[in-house]
Length: 254
Image 1 (tube, rainbow, N blue to C red):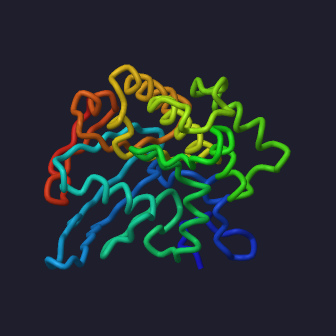
Image 2: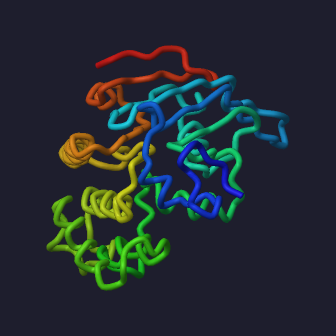
């Protein structure tokens, strides 16, 4: 059984990811972490990546996350998206208790609720840009098959990639691949978008283009969490939080 909050139940009492997504934030918050720890067991011993993290993110916010290498930035994003499970504590996204979901439930929930953008793009190399965008829609079934091609093309148009829709990733520049990856992340209209060092492999012009896309998405109501090592880039978000040794040590409005 899925974890749920309030209206996360369907009429038959089962958690319905589509209804949960539609229900959106709870008390204005889309992300709510409570006392989250994440400990990895390594050959060298136990490594604490997150320790006692409390975090609340309002719907429609653009937050940046900074910190030195090994501070827990990527782990924090991975816990929020269900890629990693917390060792202790609770992770709520909207009405879903992410920490309580099974692996199968997490995959279904993530496909409907979170758009994940990676530093290295992660486009499937044998699929064209438009086919990469279609893939999440094919997986979740949130849109009717007849709707999907037009939606994929509209998303590529939104990120300035329509003319490259039928190109393979190898034919695209780094900036173009990242824009196609952003379109793919938006395929199922998720309320939350996470980005882990999304400009780390881009030149300054492409990085500015990606930041401009993020800012437009926030204006459209999306919530964005962006991990970056670049403080100038982080300052483009509405708020910044800083991690050190797995803990939030500072937070400020930009």
